[in-house]
Length: 127
Image 1 (cartoon, rainbow, N blue to C red):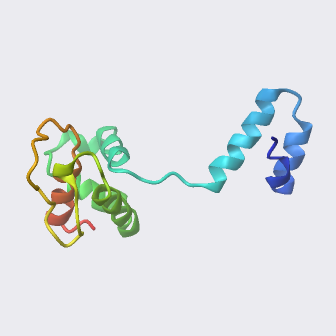
Image 2 (image 1 turned 45 degrees about the horizontal axis):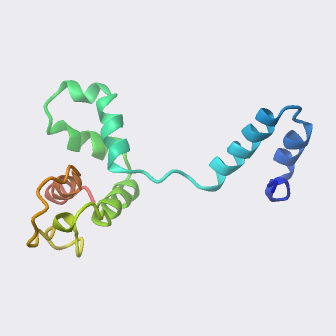
């Protein structure tokens, strides 16, 4: 089913004037992108840091990079995402104010860095 009737008038005109299916899909993609902004994640922060000139310095400069390049709200959003990570029972987090729950588990091979970044955020008061 087409999303034509969900489009605002300016996108409707572009969608209707499109000759090819690719042009219509591009208009629809633009509409979808405007409807739901991407949620910032720690992976995006790390990728931004790795692509910046900050990473030429010491590793601890990551904290300065995060403070300088992201708002408090963005940092809080990332912290919430880290706290909701369900990668394994060892890395489950009960409350932002508590330490990450290590729990008793035999899962030792989890490759997720959520716990590491939660500690980093708490230690440096990023969120």
